Image (tube, rainbow, N blue to C red; front, top):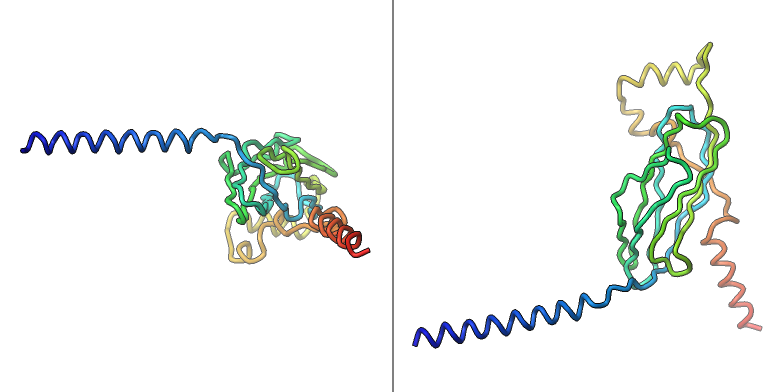
Length: 199
């Protein structure tokens, strides 16, 4: 009786394993990524001037508006001084928002700088989404330091609550031009389409 039970259990286990392997093969056969539509919040930014040598922390918010997951597989920058802080690929689930974190080292730049970051993934309209930012990198004074520089040097060694409240000087924020925003352009297209249908 025990021999028959062991054979029956072995038979059932083999059937379950064959069924499980066949289900995995069917599910894993579809390796093609479906395109995902996205909205990038403020893709074109104009940051306030920073002192040369500061590290600027940049965060771009990307909203996945589709039913498919978004895979950002590669980030290309126009300068080696811009380093992504996230491990690739960056995965943003459907109807969720993800953030692309970048660090910009200003030590190699002086004056007006305009940089681009190209995100490659399964985007719906193209394979690449472009992020842009600009700022003025002000060189350090070699002679008399002004009040702000003296204060920064004095407080650099001691972290205070003020940094947590105000943020670092290079993280004060940015401003945008609403005419350049993809969200504004998309609203204008939708309004144009509504006007066409209405008439």
